[in-house]
Amino acid sequence: KKDDGLLLAAAKRATDMGWYDRAIYAAERTTNKHNYAYRYATPHQSLVVSHSRNVGIDPSWAYGLMRQESRFVSAARSHVGAGGLMQIMPNTAKLVAQKMGETYNPAALTNTNMNIRYGTYYLSMIQNQLSGNPVLATAGYNARPNRARRWQPEFQSIASDQYTESIPLHETRDYVKKVMANAAHYGVLLGQGPQAIESRMPTIPTRSTP
Image 1: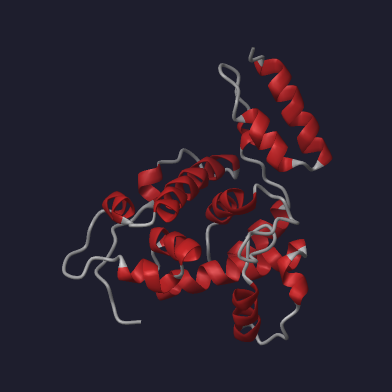
Image 2 (image 1 turned 90 degrees about the vertical axis):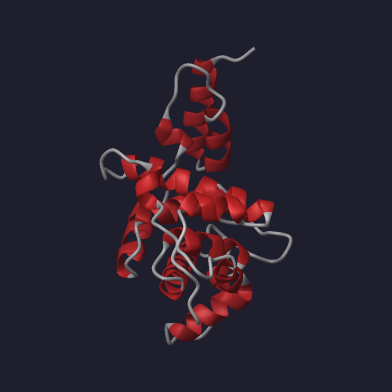
């Protein structure tokens, strides 16, 4: 039997303990009473905002992606070796370190500050590679930039939702939808005013040569 009060109390307790994945799990299950601050947790806010702004991306988008990637479990490790809050692959971390003129440090996968810094840098990097389009960059973050580019239209630009629905990989298709929806919720929580997912999903241009 669902009890919204108990679920939100559990979400608060989990948030206080830093168990954000459990807080989200509880807060998502309420029926009538909702608390979006628990459902869309904003841990490490100063780091997320500063690192995002340093590379010119919207912190609410970075949060939306991070929530989908790890549910804010800093020790998260995927079956393919991606690690940390933004689920960075070792090879990606090495590439980012090289681009930033730094020596690669394996701690980038698990250190909160480094993971957010590298993850936001990489997200910005692939957005610049993919026409500055956040929908393409989101798909590229999940499935690699070359695939996101391959799925772009050849002859005529299309709406973002049409592009998203045409992504052949179910995981990436679902990922893009969830990240962009998350970003809209985070936009509200970060004080960006009323949000429409459509405003975050600009038209997808035709494919260009990398």
